[in-house]
Amino acid sequence: MADTFNYRIDHHGSLVRPPGLSTADPEAVDAAVREAVAYQRKLRSTVVTDGDFPREDFRAAVLDTVSGFRRTDETDPDGLVRWIAESLPKANGPLLADRAARLADLTVIAPKAALPSPAYLAATTFQPGLGVSSARELGEALAEIVRAEIELLLSKGVRLIQLNNPLLLGQLGSNPADPGALSFADALAVDALAVRLDERPEGVRIGMAPGWTAPAELDRTRAEHLYDTIGADRWILPFDQGTPAELDLLRALPDERDFCLGVVDATAPDLEDVDTVMSRIDAAGEFKDLEDGAVSPSRGFADVASRPLLTAENQRRKLVLVETIARYCWGNEF
Image (cartoon, rainbow, N blue to C red; front, side, top):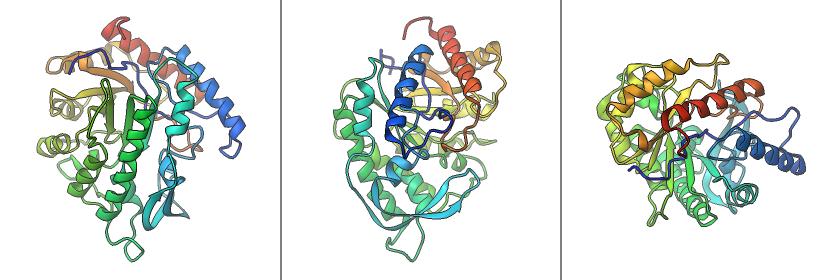
């Protein structure tokens, strides 16, 4: 798919928040977003996000905006507050489109929008015996909301949209992980609905991040089924551990899809060795056209606002390293 739209220096979207920033203070959030945009430009990123500063976590664009969900007092091991679906969701307005339009006004760099995938939300919020008959029904209702939001984002000029489903890679191992309330087959069908657009404007990429860590041993058939079912243009894949499964995950990707490799570990402060990273990318280049590729950290730096994975300074060093690796790969042609 080699073309000029690759946004080589990418990141997942969430950034470490300034100390004391509260989503309850819109003026402070807006000021922090302006500073984050300047920060990303300084770091030579080829995409710009709002850092997820206006949201509590990476799911909040949906959970805070649509009806039908109830927040509980429970949290999961990742620090995510548990929400429960009590009825089929209904959108009460744009999820991210208004903020994306404001973001576009701050810079000539392309704004990027990130949303939780509908299958992920259905798998983690469905509870039997309430107002929804099945996790599949919940997922399909969410997919319609997310697909409508994608179309609205495109109308606002956003050209790079990423859906996050951290559960999918766990389903690709020889011993698949617990899929939650939604089976693997249903999860693929639901997320496929969200990215199935009637028309794609030129240069648009709808990306899917299927998880942060490749399984220890990849089931190639299940990986191919994942790619064949979900029609995402760009796949954001882990590539920071140097395992055979990471290469196999990329090898299974059809040639007509773009890929973004998470080449630095967003959870560890130590910097990766550039030569080691380049050796991994060279290995990928033996079977993939690197003109269809981009690089990024392995995941967001603060997908939960209150639980950043690194300090702001270590985040900066990681992002600088991603930019350095991109220039090793593609020179200054971005």
